[in-house]
Amino acid sequence: VESERASPLLLDPALLRRLGVRADMASTIRVEGASMEPTLCDGDEILVDGARRIPGPRGAIHVFRREGMLAVKRLRTMGSEVELASDNPDYGREIVPMRAIEVVGRVVWMHRALV
Image 1 (cartoon, one colour):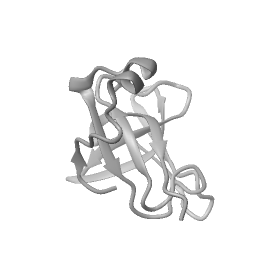
Image 2 (cartoon, one colour):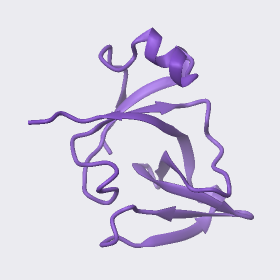
Image 3 (cartoon, one colour):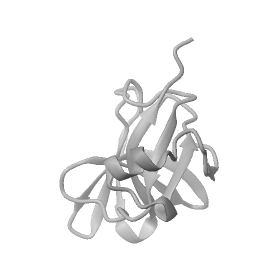
């Protein structure tokens, strides 16, 4: 994924209310790459709720930092470890210690241009 930024297009107050996201905890990120296809595609804009930083035992899509790089994967906790899984079957999954990543937030919305 690319860098985090605020986007007036996605940060409509009515949308944030409907999704239960506080404006000061919301950010948008542009997806880069194919590892989360078909769910998220290269160029999609995702809305990230920074208040939802703790993955659970059921997989959910989160943005996180690992070794200084921003990434988006489906995260699932397994005790003190977390599974990092891609939706694209051409990419693998990995299990790492929870301390190896810094969760930025949970992906709660996406939009894609139809061109």
